[in-house]
Amino acid sequence: MEIKINKEIRAYRETLFFGLSVRQFVCSVLAVGAAVGLYFSLSRVLDRETVSWVCIVGAAPVAAAGFFQYNGLTLERFLWAWLKSEVIMAGKRVWKAENYYEEAMKREVKKH
Image 1: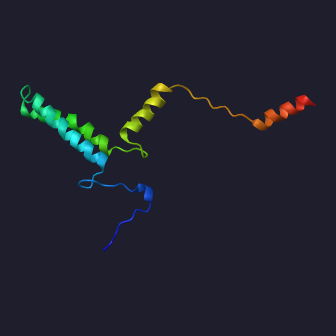
Image 2 (image 1 turned 180 degrees about the horizontal axis):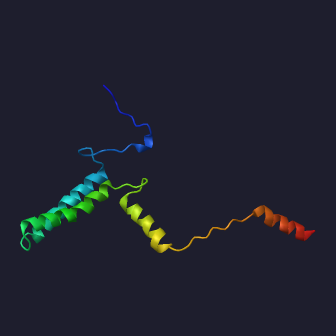
Image 3 (image 1 turned 45 degrees about the horizontal axis):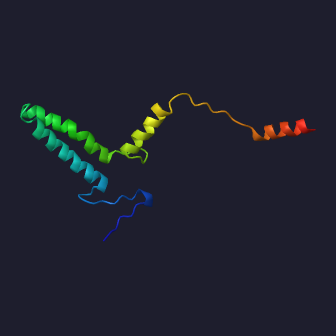
């Protein structure tokens, strides 16, 4: 009997159903729900092949949201970080070094 142990304990991810984490499982169920909802709402309006493509296109982003991970960030945390850096706090970021020692020495020289 062999037990797998991750080399990095922080890399451990608990699985719930079918080897999926809770987040992945919930997003998969929501994707199936979105596809079924799209199918029943559009099946009377469009032909079967078009409805199937719309279901795939509609469910894919929801399913991908559960599996997306970039530098340890989930999709919504990544989008929030991107929105903050590109829209909310956009613009040039100027970095200016401050030499505390030089400032202290200038004050000391002025005193004498």
